[in-house]
Length: 316
Ligand code: NCD
Image (cartoon, rainbow, N blue to C red; front, side, top):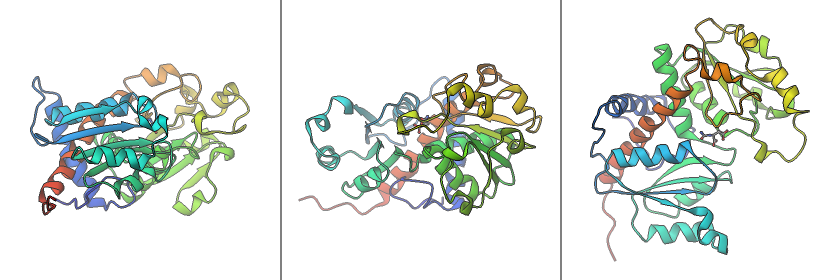
């Protein structure tokens, strides 16, 4: 087994064999999740706390289910209602929770770097469920698993990531992961939504969908992250859909067997046509959700193994 980390804070520190270890284990959990009885005991006796400082539907549900299927005691902290609102700092909240001896902390936070900081203050495994526009490692891993299962491999593919790249932690984590696995990556979007200096990542950049989608194997659409925009990044949603929204006409430029992905939540008619999103011959959006549970089970299982292998802290 190749996976030597105490936390899962991002894709950046992971080596390709470690990514493969997580995906291989996740494949086994996909099988478990398709059985009638979906229980294993990899996290039995452990406590998992989910702290989501930003709204989330699928990621939080997915982490909760993943922990429960592996036998952990799972607690969801209602962060909107918590003491943070009364002025307690993130670190104080984390220290308070730490005193309850959790083994796994799953954290989503609007500020880039906040989860990393928190991991330095607690003595349990921390998983980043999305920090600002920085990283969202389990999303990139579940996307990778979805691609690997659909295409039979995770290297030498032409992959287009389209839309609001600048505000997207999903794009960043995917860029890192798919680059490490030696794929050819194209970024497509309006120049206003393209981070400066992005070409240094060894990617091709396009502002025209039809050019950018030529012969790609994978089309990954992103949500327009309005909550992270503080000005006029796009002229109007109608205009955006016309130029960058994925419809049948634009998709026809990709390979005939190209798959369509979206991390959710989707804005139908803004970045993607509803019919394409629902087309089971092209869209793997539901598979992404399914892979999400399995990948999170695998990540927490591997972190728990490393936690157990650690020398016990001396109790005061
Ligand atoms: C993404 C996120 O929160 O970064 N969603 C998710 O985790 N499924 C993408 C998004 O919000 O657009």
